[in-house]
Length: 380
Ligand SMILES: [Zn+2]
Image (cartoon, rainbow, N blue to C red; front, top):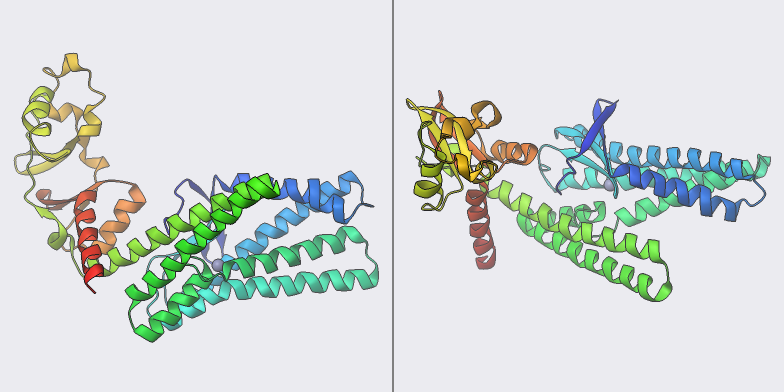
């Protein structure tokens, strides 16, 4: 699934980098608001208003700690099985443990996917135990209601994540099972992602129904968002797997469009636009001087140049300089190139050796590969 990119790093836990996406703060206030404002006043009416707020803060903190432990379960299991763990990101729909590589086999997938819900079940049991002991020792409803709520939330987290749609944990378990039976990661991902999309649409439908007929406005809207997120995540997860599988064995040199058309640094913007951008099917041209690549002019970059200055400014002045471009060697594996394109949110990577331009890899090249995958998919 595509990881949220507006995330800030907040530290490391057990050697795993923890990042918070900015959308996470919305979730923080939603949880705090519903715990302190609605749930705790209803279930612990004898506690004061300040008490409800304290319970809410503690409950919110423990909920996020639970979420983090769930993801840490995945991350530690992944590292235990020899996968490179990038880190954990918490965002508005919960958390996500990011790994650099796909699982090596269905066994790895099963263990990594199962560990999160297992941690949540264990936490649920722990919180219910605290609530039970608290009731027996009569420690007061502030503690028992908070503990019981967290037990319930962790149970909910485990059960929701076990729904069999990819990229939810249950979808990954399903994928592992199909992978084991068919021996094909691609087919397994197709099945699990298909269920994920169906599940997403089902959740959207239930959400709309709650919105319209049950009057549960916030809950309904929330479900529509989650369902939509799930359909998108299922689709992009499937594409990522296909792309990695198809392009994984390739190097940048094999996948690139070789010998792209280039321009010199002294070409005016006017010439660039009329002789190149309007006449060729490309939106970008590498700028080359004395056989060395020095930058790249792009259609986007030229949009800021006022028309009155088209004849005086030249490519060298309006290009994206080399420092802001991503250059790779022809031997670089395509998996790394795709990662760089994703991480830097760039549309083009230049393939060069010793600053000599050999080729270019653009998102449209990648899209062409994806088309081929789709064709092969239909044929198989
Ligand atoms: Zn999980």
